[in-house]
Image 1 (cartoon, helix red, strand yellow):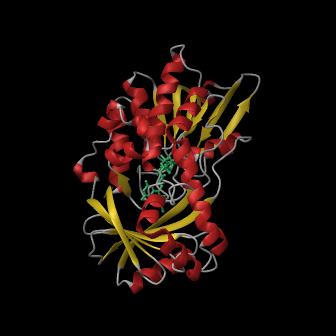
Image 2: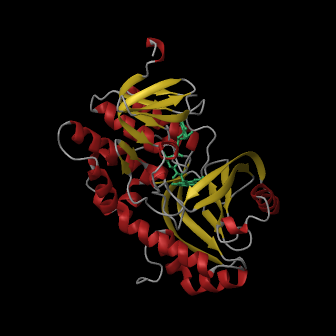
Image 3: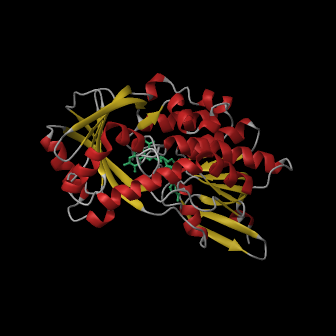
Length: 377
Ligand SMILES: Cc1cc2nc3c(=O)[nH]c(=O)nc-3n(C[C@H](O)[C@H](O)[C@H](O)COP(=O)(O)OP(=O)(O)OC[C@H]3O[C@@H](n4cnc5c(N)ncnc54)[C@H](O)[C@@H]3O)c2cc1C
C-alpha cells in the first residue's frame, strides 16, 4: 500500500455533525482529545429536516431527572438568542372535528440551521475539527491489520473510537453490518412558511395525517409546518398532503425539508466494538412526540464521557449503554407504548376523535410529555 493511500488515523472519528455529533465532539475536544467530525452536507444543519422545537433545560431535566444535577449539560443548554426563534408556552391539539385541547409548554421554535451551526462552532472553538462535504461511504474490515477503515469521498480514516451520529438511518451501523439499527421509521415532510399568526405550537390529528400528525411551530416571522404519516397510510404523497394542508390555512411555502423519524425506541445495544451510537442512530427519539434533539445532545455528552473514562482505564464502553438506559430507558418505553396504543386505536377519524376525547386535556398532555396517558397505563 502506498503512503498516499494510508488512512489518516484519529483518536475519535465522529460521523455526522448534528446535535449528537457536535456535542460529543465538543466534550471530547474540551478534554484535549483529538476529534475529527465528518459531515456529508456542505453546510452543517442545511437543510433543516426538523420541526425545530427545542426544549428548554427545565423541560428536559424534568423529563429526565437523572440529568438535573449535570452542570455541564445545564450550561451547554444556554443557547444564544439568535438560534432560539420564539419562546412557546402553549400547545393546542386538534381532534379531526377540530375540537381543541390546550395546555402549557416550555420550549422554543428554534432556527435549526443556526442551532446546528452554533453547536458545531462551539466544538470547533474547543479544538474539534469538522470536515464538511465528507460522506462516509464504506467501512472496510482489514482483518490482517486488525482494523476498520472508514472510506469517504474525501479520504480514508481509522480511529481508536468511532461515534455514529449519522442520524435515523445509522449509516455507520449499516455500513459495518450485523448491528441492530433504529426501527419503525416514520416518513415526514416539513416546510418553512409565512402567513401564520398564532403563538402556539399546534398539532392536528386525523385524516390530515393518518396515524401521525401535522404540526405548526411558530419561530418568529416564519413557522415550521410538517406532516408525519404512518407508513401503511402513504397513499397520497406527503408533499401533496402538506401543500393541501398549507393551502387550507392560507400559508405560503418557502422551502421544504423532511426525513425519517425512528419511533421504535432505543436499540438494544448502542455500543458495538469501538463504535458508540448517539441520538437518532441509537433510536433515542421519543416515539409519542417525535422529539429527539434533547436526547441527541445528552447521549453525545454521555458517549464522550464514556470514551474519556475508557481511555483513562476507567469504564468499559458498555457503561455508555447502561447510562442511556438508566437515564432515558423508562421514558422511551412509556412513550413507545403510547405511540403503539395510538397506532392501534386511531385508525380513522371516528376512532381518533373518540380516543382523544377519552384522553381529554390531561391524557393528551401526558402522552405528549411521554408520561403514561392514563396515569397507570
Ligand atoms: C421532519 C422532522 C421533524 C422533527 N422535529 C423535531 C422537533 O421539533 N424537535 C425535536 O426535538 N426533534 C425533532 N425531530 C427529530 C430530530 O431532528 C432528531 O432527533 C435530531 O436531529 C437527532 O440528532 P442527531 O445528531 O442524532 O442526528 P441528525 O440531526 O440527523 O444529524 C445527523 C448528521 O449526520 C450527517 N450524516 C448522515 N450520514 C452521513 C454520512 N454517511 N457521512 C457523513 N455525515 C452523515 C447528516 O447530514 C446530519 O448532519 C424531527 C425530525 C424530522 C425528520
